[in-house]
Length: 191
Ligand code: ADP
Image (cartoon, rainbow, N blue to C red):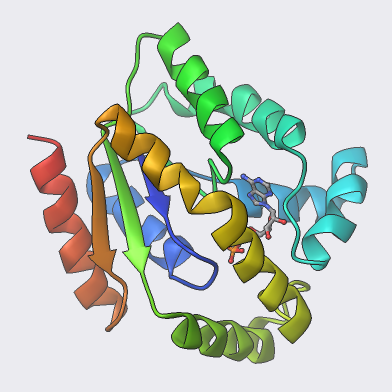
């Protein structure tokens, strides 16, 4: 099974991904987490990505596509893969389509979390106080929202046009409530 958890910054992708990973035994591949680990290790990729991420911009498509191409085969050896934070542009989605086609795989589901923008900003500013992530400043948050609307939202149309089941899920409420909706949506997609 290969699925995508999709949504704007602050929509709860990481929180829900952890639950989906457990329940459906999928390997969680978060490009944001991978990049943050690269930044923390001071690797050449981390050095290139760090400044871009802190400003709230997207790292170049080629860089992130290479990372996913390197990690996907190993992740796919288990029951399945849950992509989180990727694809974030139509070009990334096209690259993923090609990778999956090479292996004779297709996407099983796309879960898109819906959360109003005012709530997203609240959550991210709260996270900034609790976790201190470098890109949770007011300015970087505004830039991430801008990039989401400009480049990332179009990924949903890309999949809808291809007939991939895109399930919109209300992301408001407790993590358990949201997960209940996701579980039902994946259940419907995978039968
Ligand atoms: P959020 O969804 O809260 O913005 P992520 O952890 O998914 O958090 O991503 C953090 C940052 O990492 C993004 O703002 C971007 O700079 C970079 N990033 C992650 N995934 C991608 C991707 N697929 N393409 C380009 N940049 C990415």
